Image (tube, rainbow, N blue to C red; front, side, top):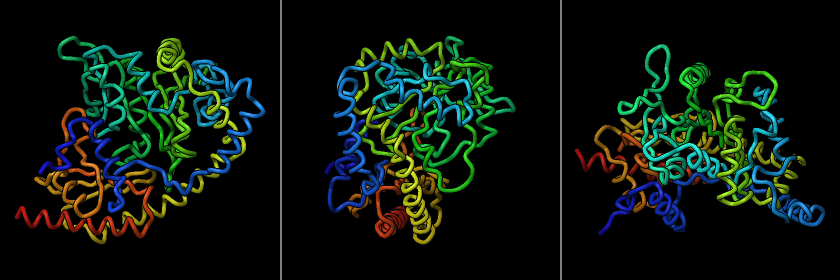
Length: 400
């Protein structure tokens, strides 16, 4: 009989398998990166769409500019300035159909076949999916020595086309990049003339601690705009409002704006103006901020429930991260354990997880697992972790 884990050949396959498994009513899914649906502001979303369709029909139901509607871009630029990127203007902001499209646009605009992307592993599998059609190679961000940076290619001597990271509550590990690492990375980008992609879908979901400065703010020259530094920033309302709105944005150095807009025109002409105006209204009326506050309160309890259950039930030799925010906990099994074997056994026990090797572009770790805590109530989290711990313990006994 074919094992579920055998279906994982690419991260695209992984996504399909996990969606199928998560749809089974007998399975508790700790696999997806899904917000809790009870947080969705359905009435407010309905009111916002009705309002803009009725009162702003001429602009909300028409084609719009490829870079996005100006009032939303102005609002995002103001937010970026408030967070320390003082030279960002609306000219730097491009609205995208979800932040995932932003990653695809970066690849389409900057990458040619066999160009290299520098990244930390493990990393967001959606980014790897976005760039797979461009056929790049990958290299690790070099954190060694007193001056971390980027290694030139052995074949051509060329630097990576860009580097990619998620400094806040990284998907899949939940870890946060320390301020000193952020400063070192930006200094390396400026020294080596490498653009860094700062992907920040989870930044609003901090449950404890102090948020370090963004890479964007550290790369900002502090002068008059538009911004033209070495960081591209991507954001989204998917985690603070609802994923189905598909409204994301990029803050792009001025020298790259025209190329990315041309790429976007070729993909979809424009992100839906109707959705953009609705999202703008939801932000202006405070719905996004209120939903984000409720999300932090709910997810903090769910994270704590998962950490407590792991502490209570996991057998010796299993370790895990303790995220200050975001959506994920990263498990590391004892050496020699295979997460794909655990995946199949966990599915049979009614728990869906993600084998960690799908999050690697270069050197996969086969004894790691990603767990999501945002989409499952606290008592169900405890039950799922108990089942998973039993599976891991049983597998260890079988291997002994």
